[in-house]
Image (cartoon, rainbow, N blue to C red):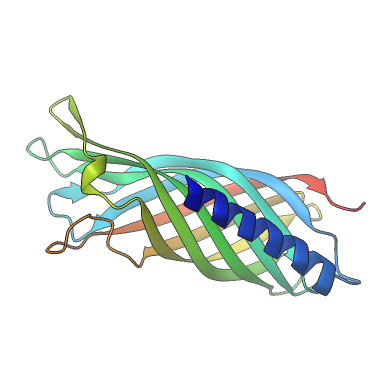
Length: 198
């Protein structure tokens, strides 16, 4: 919990400093809510297939100028994998993810973005034949990932749509002999809640 608070505070300070130092003459920072669908799987896991699950949270955007911006999010994300057949189990992972990304606007509506994501494991449960087991002790409490995506803004940034692929960079298993990575394809819709200093 202390790591989560530290990173959240760091991101908030970074956003505030960026808005003050680089946002002169650019659009004002915005805060919004977003949610969507995860297509999640575990790299290196056999006997599994893609799991469809939601993610939901908030985002903030600070403009350096009209083209370059800093985007940070806080997402409750349901991940893991589905069973490949009746003889395999499913894995339910719940993360608090904090992606921090540089975003470049390709014109007024279209954008591309990439950065780093800090993931904090909240729960890990394996389900086999309707029997659920807590396996959180088998996983690391934090992971690093690389989010890469494209987005499209509508109605003067009041609504946005995002397609993103999150590549797991660190081993999520608490093991020195096995390696597994989260791989998540995300489709999201965001809604503007507030424009700061307006």
